[in-house]
Length: 208
Image 1 (tube, helix red, strand yellow):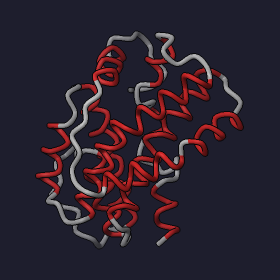
Image 2 (cartoon, helix red, strand yellow):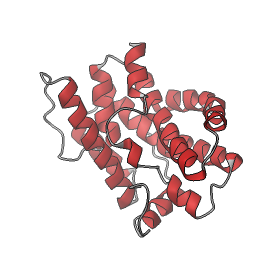
Image 3 (cartoon, one colour):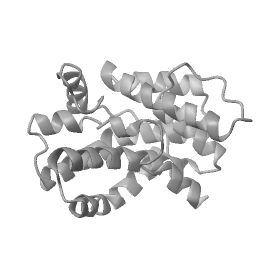
Image 4 (cartoon, one colour):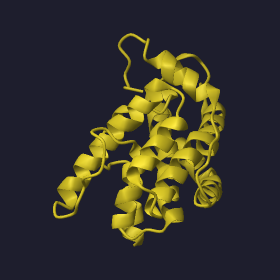
């Protein structure tokens, strides 16, 4: 099952995640993230908040939570309409990928644009991952997606960015462990503001 976990956490997973920065583009443009120190602080905050919540939804779905209920719970935990749209766009891409990889499975029961952690939890259950492993994949990719975006936006040394992700690995593990204990409700106004401001930016590099 370890290879399945690695596949889910792979940034090359073709679900459209490469066009989303998780608020990083807006954070860089506004000067909130400007160097390695501020990048690490941003990523740690993202892990502890949006990563935790998304990981908990995915873990709950992996553990049997109904997808319709999980979709509604994700909406309730995502105040920003722009952030909800970004999650649903990636969820739609993930569902399309799942249907391609496992065409004989029943993938009905989803909305046209399901939230990303809802699909991630369903796929993880299909791959026989545990809820905590599922949460870890979601938490980890919430970090690496933004880290990769920062590397591109700030022209950072990839080795330095990788060092930060290794430094935050224990935080990812601890967050996934907490996420697997039940649905989490932790909002962060900063990410909501960044997501909404990004929709008003002319010619952005990333969708979110």
